[in-house]
Image 1 (cartoon, helix red, strand yellow):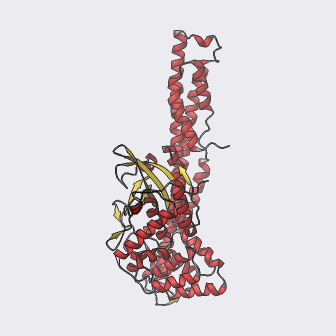
Image 2 (cartoon, rainbow, N blue to C red; image 1 turned 90 degrees about the vertical axis):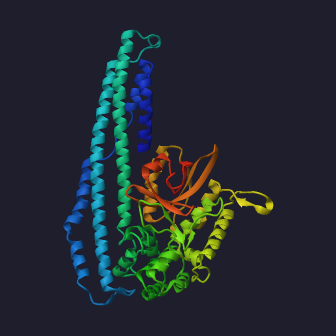
Length: 516
């Protein structure tokens, strides 16, 4: 069975602690043999370099593609319509220019990730070999194991030899530990970046013949106004895949209805939200009803009513609001409140029910706040949350892990396609081990619930938040106090998300994800 990078790292860290403490020759020989049994960092640097060159070659072979498409976009095209859903030719070419740029960035980013990984593996494998050499030298200097009676007494010369060998062995296992850490970190960084670039190469995600290439291109390109387009795309990679599958499964009649809905939409954003509703699992009848509520609304209205989380900055903590009311919890409902907001992120029909009311036309922040609180309380009961206080004045007092799994699977799974399981994270290695899966999920557009804990005046306190984004080694955390904050992956590994909450919460102790 292949040794995991986490296991290798943990074994070598333990040996780095124990070898310098070895109190006898036999103990030292046993520890050296354990270290020699740790496998080298895996990977073929030459193969990784070759793959990186192939990725880079895809950009070089079509190096002027972006420029050529961009020149067409700038020439001023006639106001003609293309595709099945009525797209202006000029808009389509502009979207093609952006898609070409994204694709070039994806190939370049993938090539860079593979090249960096190749270099790291090459260095780590050499360092691992150097460490093994030192261990072999230490073992040879010690000779064979002592017999039962020999091990009772160690003269000055034998002690000096043991101490010298112990120093050499400690240096060797430290080199192996550094190699394991470097290779592990490089592999995780490469996986994170490759997952990100795979999600960013969006134009091929919607695999359906029921829409033209132009239509699919425009839908993938649509974003909410008011922020960085790359951080505010309406259709996530997961949405695009699910929408494509949904279109393929429609009857010819229903497919034609869906195309008419898209063709009659007023803006690219309106089209994208119709497809997001289909991706969320709604029937064409339900999408049509939803479409009637949002038809003709401008891009700002759509963002305010359908996007509970908007991103304008990667450096500042941002409040997430509808009007003057926060998307925040009421009382001790952090888990159901995080889940309500996460569902609204992946299910625009649900988001509109909260912001726009039954008609979908309301714009009253106070009424939104009442509906939001009602939903938080509904999920609190759905997850069998605990309560405290007198019978006539019971108040929410948290939710256990089983309840969180239950509401995640009831409220999120139908709209993301993922199932949710609880996994304890008791160490930095545990958090490091799950980070790749978290990055993959949020890059695809699927929020990941996590729990954090700490102390307040000596009393244990816990809190539930959501990881909703990832970019350049940073994680975007939605806190149901109504804010989003970008924290570093290292902060997550260290367990300290106090920057997204407050100083009490310094231990990330649980994640809810479908992890093999």
